[in-house]
Length: 59
Image (cartoon, rainbow, N blue to C red; front, side, top):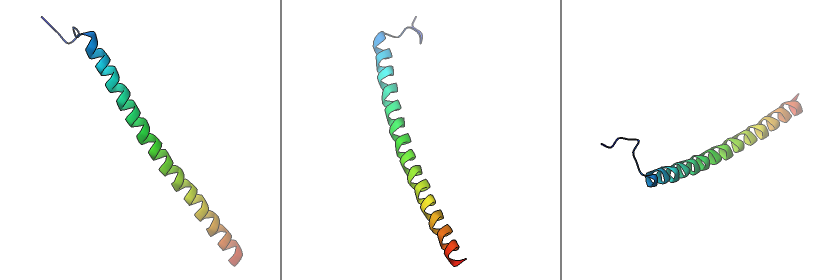
């Protein structure tokens, strides 16, 4: 009688390949998110600098 632990070695390799594909997709999404966050932070720094210099000029 077969149970869930009596699978062949081929299914283990397929699972490993699937896991690697999931890891690569997740890494790509994280890299994209990190780039977007870096752009937002850089833009916020530039805007803050211009606002601060503008307030300093009018003071």
